[in-house]
Image 1: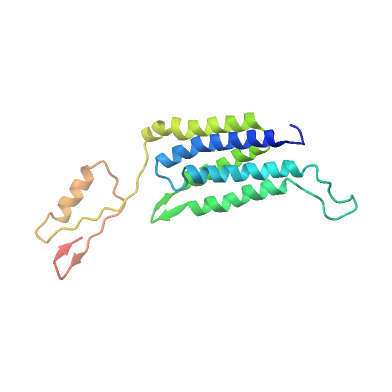
Image 2 (image 1 turned 135 degrees about the vertical axis):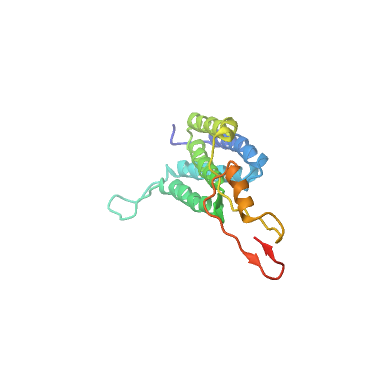
Length: 195
């Protein structure tokens, strides 16, 4: 990789970044995720631009050797990558016992790294990263659906006083393909309903 880059190199890096991130963004968008096409493309392009800028600054003379300030260009993309960790953390939400957004956060972090590869001129590594991401997001989707998972939920049954008894409800839950961890019931005095 040459330290000096020209506009042709910059254009190639940005085009590869845009194309690769668009393919990943389409996958996220078609599944209705928060980070869809535009978000994924912007994140990846921002990372690529930070690496291009670091490459452009490579020829900038640093401070003299006895100075306490040294030009460390790798701090720039490292800061971008660290910042994406915070944005990714914000994409993860907890709704009761359900946690959503983990794949979205991982995708944002991944396209950041992919953008750094393209922006740094490692086109082959960036293409390999894109292929890997597409395989994980599209190729493993069907396999992921086949995996057996434990699912946790809260089931609330509301009946009237003349509805099924607690014993009948417990029996129906016992024969269902469920594992009941806890069971409780309350009676509402005003309506005489059981829950």
